[in-house]
Structure formats: structure tokens, C-alpha cells
Image 1 (cartoon, rainbow, N blue to C red):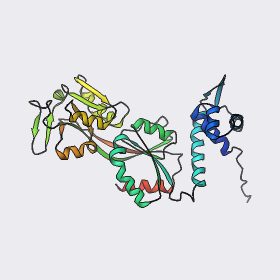
Image 2: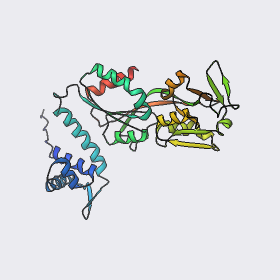
Image 3: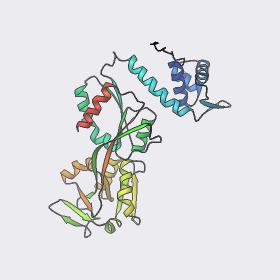
Image 4: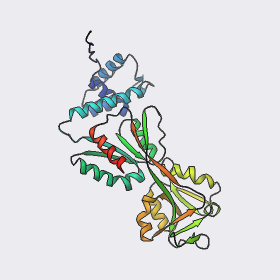
Length: 311
């Protein structure tokens, strides 16, 4: 039986690094500064890579470089290769490993910290980077292979479904809430002492100012799909970018809010805010784990996954 002949790749890590830097910065001059190489060396490496691949990666228009449609899939693969090479290169220096974690705003601010505490307890020397933004921004970073794993609130909507793995993780409930003794509830909402909450119907809620997260956030996605569609004639709906801002505005009695139970649990327990149930409306939602199939799944990655699954 003939032994299989191993073919050595002619593409180099330097060529891939140059391409990734040009892709990210948009020019050979900025890439040369980032990589501490001469501009001619950067241009040469990029030309060699295009020759090896037998396809253009950029279209040259004067001094400008415009991304060719071929560029993005090559960029994704190059990021994966370079990431694995760096993991190998720093294996002994960072034996516990490095992980880039992304999280949508509510999870990142209120749920992720105790999970990180468990990760550091399991791997005291872990090197963790975090990126917190709204769901669509985080999913975009996963697609670009800038994040190893993401925890998001809304249904992930990646550009390339075949490249992204997503798994249902936990269930969360959004709450409509108000300041205790709010002017907006006086004489309108029924108070249920046994459940420590008010109750409104859809028609009553539609007459009140409602403060919600901005479009693109996972919280807003659920509000659009499960609440606002029943409020086509709502008096005022204000989009606010930060959950903390919504909470403080509701505390100032500017209107009612709608956020995850995790965001307002301290204020609910202290009696500063109060839940407002909306008859016939279910605001439960699923939280998701998201990662790129091409991303290297290191030992620290698997440890973190085990912690999440055990929750």
C-alpha cells in the first residue's frame, strides 16, 4: 500500500496576515503600519496570495482597494487559520488558554459576571476578552471570527446560516414595569396584592408612554414580535439604547418600561419598581449560544461551554 504523499502548502501565514490586515484597514499603507512592514512588502505578499489562490481579492481603483466578492470567504478562513496558529504559538505561555466572549447587553451586564467567576475558578490563569453590544452587533462579530462564543438574547440572524452554529441555552422573561405609585397607573390599572403587581389590558397599555430598547437589540426583537404588534396605535413608544437608562427614566415616572427580569430584580425586591402584567401577552424568550463553525474550539472554550450547559 502506497504511503500518502503530504503536500506542503505554498500559502504562508505572512500572506494571510497581510491579507487580513488589508481587509480590516482597507489599505496597504495602513496595513503596513499595523504589521510594521514596508508598503512594498505588504503589496508583494498580497499579490503572491492572489497568485496562489488564482483569484483576485481586491479591485484596484486608482490608489483605492475595493473588496472583491471573493474576499469575505477567504477572510473567514484566514482568520480561523491564524487563530489556530496563534493558539499553537502561545500554547505554553498561555496554557490555560484565551477566549473571546461576546454577549448581548442584558446578558453581558447582569448574567455573564457570575459565569465568568466560575470560569476563573476552574481556570485561574484564563485570559478572557469580552465584547458587549446588542444582539446583531455581537452576531456580526461572530461571523467575522472576532469572537469565540456569544451569548445573545434575540434569535440570531446571521448572514451565512451554514457557517454559524446556534443552540438554545436558557429561557428569560421580559417584564413591563412602572414606578411604584406611578401617575400612569393611578385610577387605571388593577392592583393584585397577592402577586404584588398591577394588571393592564392591551387597550389600556396603548394609552401610556412605553420605553423600550433600540432596534437591533434582542430585547427589542421580542418586544416587536410579542408586544408592539398588538399596540399599533400606542400613544408614545420611545427607543432607548441602554437598559439602565430605561430603568432610571421609569424610576423618574417618565413612562412604563419593558426589560428582562434580570435587569430590574433588585428594584422589584426593594419595592422601587413594580411589575405590570399585560393580560393575554407572553413575553418569555429563549437565549442562545452562538459560534462560528470554523472557530478553533480550545480547551478553555469547552470548559466555558460545560459551565453554560450546567446552568
